[in-house]
Length: 188
Image (cartoon, rainbow, N blue to C red; front, top):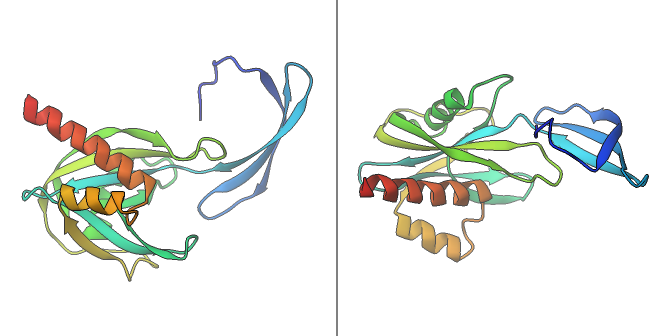
């Protein structure tokens, strides 16, 4: 998390894990700025995850639709999942793609990474572009039984995003990077 050699204008006075959770832990840190003023930072400590922009040979984007409990709504998203302890994101990405959609990728390239909510959370999501897909059977985890898979064009993705139907930040970021990578690959 972060660069330990980076200069800061504060010191950590204390750090306490106040809740160990299934998905993330919550820490409360007391900090003291160089001018002596103290502050409190609540941090969701998350292991991170992998997100896959899977593109079919027909040029469509593979998305999933699933109910997201915190928002109380059905969301259209890219296949994604949380890293297991000490898991390499390069291994998580193809696992999540196959688990959620049944697709296996003949080629998977890392696009980059994003900090989802750096103001209070350590979550870093690793973004991938998957191509040369082979269809198969999904093997979803408990709670993902209602998930459905859909293939949409880039134009449909853009329209649904601009219309406010697709609002998942990781999905929007990964598709934007996938477009840039595909355009660069086409120019090469």
